[in-house]
Length: 329
Image 1: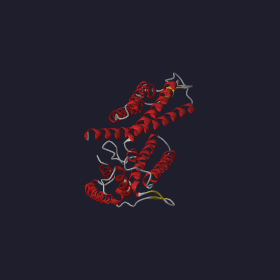
Image 2: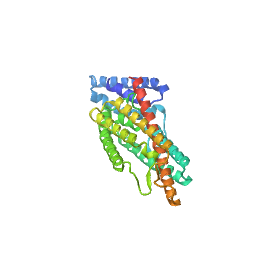
Image 3: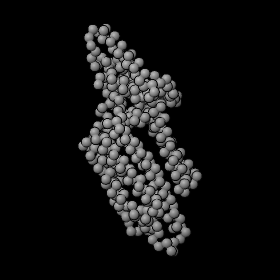
Image 4: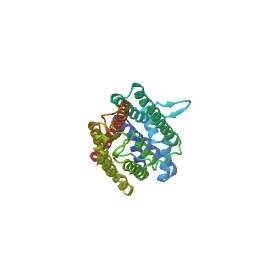
């Protein structure tokens, strides 16, 4: 595939489906004419460096697609923070975060949280997510989109069928090119191994105690402890294998989906079994002890419910991605 072909495919990724063919044909004709005129002026066939220089004049694929879309929406605060090239993707990523946060807040209210704690559980994460997501897109806009020297036509490529350009993952793939999947896979594997190691160490250290003061583990903790440890151990398989085989994308997606589904099942079973902690001897329990038990179990129920929702969303996205990869193989 030529440099121009890769450039056109990258532009195509950010165009409305109904208009892709017409726009790409027009852009291809414009590029071809420009290349032919430049070759005639120079008296020789253009080198890759000369073709890259012409493509740079046309602009980053995201910027070119935005011009054809006629999209002028921006995020402005004193000056332009996020331009039309990234605005639609920025809104999609932000909307997903907002939807998940509001859903978790609703679950917290149903599980027994107060109105004020439920709102606090929504507003605080929303503020944090808005700040982080906006900051990431501001950096991308300034570093790669608006800076003419911030991108190289020789590294920009089409994302392919297994990466969604409406995500940060898809944007990064186009900005960094072919080196992205391997570099990110190795880095992510190392980070994932470290995180899982910490989680497993903490889980084993806490263990399944016989008694904690006047409390002891309830069925919601005791009956799912061993399966939960087994899932954590299984989760080690994915990052270890991908550390040595970073391009095994389907394996990574499938194993993550399997682990996520197992977590969802364990979470639902735990919620169905009942309390996480119970009083060792409930007969002489004081009102304070009973209220403490209820408070602990309420917090745990909310946390598990939130984890189940988030993990279910992640599992659905992984399954969708795996399905797309298989149907386009």
